[in-house]
Each structure stands twice: as structure tokens, then as C-alpha cells.
Length: 414
Image 1 (cartoon, helix red, strand yellow):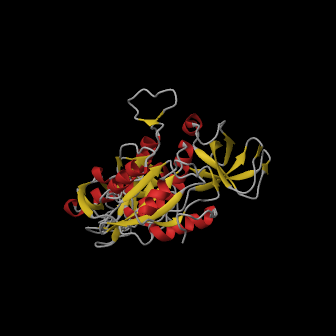
Image 2 (tube, rainbow, N blue to C red):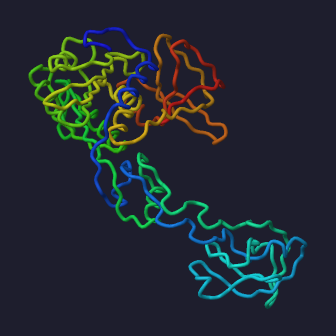
Image 3 (spheres, rainbow, N blue to C red):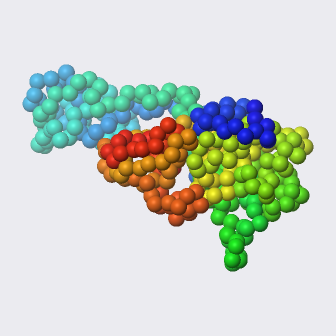
């Protein structure tokens, strides 16, 4: 375990593994009952169970004619049309059944009548008066979903720990659940540091910049299912920083930006150490984001994980995705998801230095079966414009310094 005075840089893989292991020990927030649409983006705190068999009856999957498969093995086959069943109809009430040499016109989603064991698509039939000519043979079970094939009553349809998206909402609605139990959004304190920062609604002085990091981090927190609490900017003063750190440590997770490098006024590690912080690492061999810090503080009977992220905007965005997201997911009750890596063809040659794993802002486009990627023009990890035009990062391993156009490279999606 690292201490605040450690200078050894961990590899990206080792640092990510430390984060994942620590995330696996964290308990999620408390469950709460909420409406279906309010639950979108949050994580299920219960299993969603089937309240009946799905489907509750043999269901037609095509418009056409319900038949006995044995009657249409030799085609063309001429059958007697004995009725019609639409979606929502009750077969028992209508008394419709299919006997030898008979067919029932049926619509997609309708219950298959007694006696029929297959549905012939309407495109493969011709109708005249009460007669139906079937021009294509079908097998028993074709175009029919048996009762209970999707789920039996009491089966788990969406498991606890699933992040609620449109499909989970549809399932919950289908089983009659207008409200579901989800884990509360983790409260994430966001604290930017630095005398050079002013709030977004103030005009910056000649040597000042607006505090964009707090807002970009808050946006990433919300996208990940958390609740961001933006704290006032901490000045480059140990007492001011300690006061705001104590406030931030009341949340479920604390994110700091800036103050983690080796400069005279980079006070984050020093002040955290004075509060009894335990550091898991204090630097990772990546670019951007090398000075990233991860640890926890036990204060007033509560242990809160924290990340100290570099102050440059792109560094902040990258390190959030690489390291913060697993911890935030764990606090939200979600299962650990692997980073979304893919492969793409490099459009133009690139060269860099060895020694660090690099995550370079890039643009992925092209056909789905042959995606291409190229670097966006950027001026380093403070270049917000480059970050806003990129949709992925090209991942350069620490032992490569040259890639030629046409090579396959690894890409990290946002």
C-alpha cells in the first residue's frame, strides 16, 4: 500500500486492479422505492420477478394462419378457414379451435388456438372466400412462442444490480411494477483547488481561469448515476483546504481536481495525510493523468474513499473514466463493468514516447465493420476544445513509440 510520500508510479494495469479490488469491498447506498421513469440510470436493489408465465398463452409471432403442421407438409395445401383471432382476443370465449384440414387467421401477438401447432406467414398463403391455400410447409412450433417460454411465474426477469435502462423499465411495466426499489444515488463531493480558479459566472482576471473541472466532473458523476455536490473552490492554503476536505468527506465519495502534482502549492496529499488518509496509490504511469491519487479517510466514524485528480481538464476526464467509475458504480450498487475497449484502423501515422500508457483524444468513425480512428489535434491535457471534439481515446502501450497508418490500434470509448 502506498503512503503519501511514495514516488513510485504504478502501471495502469496495477492501478486499475487496486481500484477494482477496493471497489469490491464497498457497500452500496441505501435502497429506496421510486417510480419507473425516476429509476432510469439507477441500479436495482431488488430482483424484478415475473408475476405470471410469459407469455401466458402460446403466442403467434407472425400475421398469418394457425394450422396443424401435419396438414401442410405437402403443398400447396387447401384448408378451410374457420375463424379469426386478433391480439387481445380470448380464444376460450370464442370457442375457436383448429381441426384436421382447418386454419384460423391470426395476428401477431394473438393466442394460438387449441389444435394448432404452427403459424404460416400470410405471405405464404392465398385466400379465397372460406378457403386458404398454403404454399409453404411449416414445422410444428414454427412462428409460435410456447406459454412460459420466456419466463415462469416467480422467475427473475431483471436481477438486482442491473442498471435501469429502457429494457428494464419495459420488463417492470410488463409485470405490473409502477415502482421499483433502487439504490440511492451516491453523493459525490466535487472540490476544485487553486488560486487561479474563478466560478463560471465571474469574469476571470488576466491570470485566472474559470472552474470548468467541477462542472465536467459533476456531469460525469450524473451520467454514472451519482449526485454531484459542487463545493466552493479551495484556495492554495492548507487551513482552507482542510476545512473543505472535511466537508467533502461527509459525502459517499470525494473527488478533488488539482493540487496533486509536485509543485510548492500542491497541498492535497499533505493535507489529506494530516487528516489520517490512507493512500492506495499516488501516481500512475499514464498520460494524461500521471499524478492521480487514490485513498480513503476514516473520520467521525465514517470511511470515505477519495480521488485526487490532476487539474488539467483532459486529465480529469480520463482519470474519472479509468479509476473513479468503478468506485462510483460499486457505491451505486452496480456490478463491475470492464472498460469499453475496441479495435480500429489507424487513419494516420502517430509517434510518441515510451514509458507511459497514453490515452490520446481521438475521433472514431467509418463503417461498422471497418471503423477508423485518428487523433484530434490537441495542445496537451489542458486543451478543452480537443476533449469536446473527441469521442474516444487511442490507447498507446508504454513500449510503443510509432504506429503506421493502417495498423489496428486499441480504442477506449467514452
